[in-house]
Length: 452
Figure 1 (cartoon, helix red, strand yellow):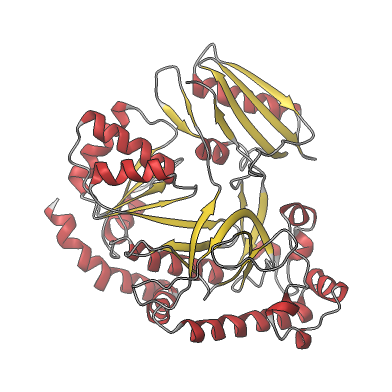
Figure 2 (cartoon, one colour):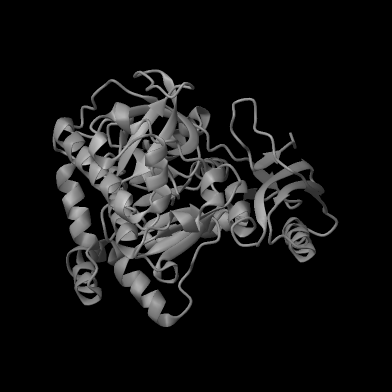
């Protein structure tokens, strides 16, 4: 325990810089620059943001036929986009448009085989394939680190993660590197039980993480266990919730159990971090150094501060597969206030969405819906969209919108995986549908539990 606490500054000031020097990564330089720019006046940050946006438009005009055609259809050239009003003439990019034009969105000069590729399920339960460069990935990681620190964590300190399908180090070399650079312990949300929570608490007592990080609802479930089991070893210095909307009652429970404020973060895998609370908790600071973020009414005009608006994001960093005016399918509220922390990054008040139910196994343990999506939609070929509904303790209905690669074996694999996970005797009905309807709010739910 003491060794981990004493070792954190050594990791931060010696081991991490040496590892960065060895690997040649510019990650630390990106992070240090973001630490500096966050306190620039908003006007200065807006100028940087606009310069990066116009540079991006000039780049895609010359190197990306997909976006050049969209600009031409709107009667635009890079030279004519001199204001936000002109920029809004570029058509909004939908998830369906991305699915239909994934490879066409790759800019000239990039080899798809050499790019980083990942598949995301997202909060809507629909999959997207995303490509980006290693540089873009490092810039995203640097931004995430800056915001991690807002929760009270410092580089080199261990982290306790409440997450599904954790990627644990498998060999001795990986375990040694993990301990020397960034120790992380996990509570796997694929099986949250009294036993797993007690084991997590015991490991926490040994490693002494300073940050509790994870899906918003998963941290809430952990807090309930900690309260009911009267565990006192899990005592983080900061709590960072992400991946889904943090409900007010969940925030109250988490803060009551652990005795500290929750730092809530908002983003999506397509463009990474969009906004985050700081230590003042007066709203979410928008990541305008990396993104151009719009809040729009139904007619496409800008929503006023305090007025709900559809969130549309332009990624200023990803030139390999640009996302320009991408509709995230969430609704947010722009703020007109200034945060007392002194940062120049503007605020949003709140975001709607990211609500996913936990499903319940026969033994009483709970499974995070977001983790189920990570194990099915993003890994099994041919699943375009899916929704899992638990009608009873021994009955699941899985609605699937199939894609071109969907086969009988995919359906059998999906059924077998869920039946094994939820226990023998569990009925899993896979229903092939043309589409999955959204809730009345306009949001999709990929996991619904109907057990009281």
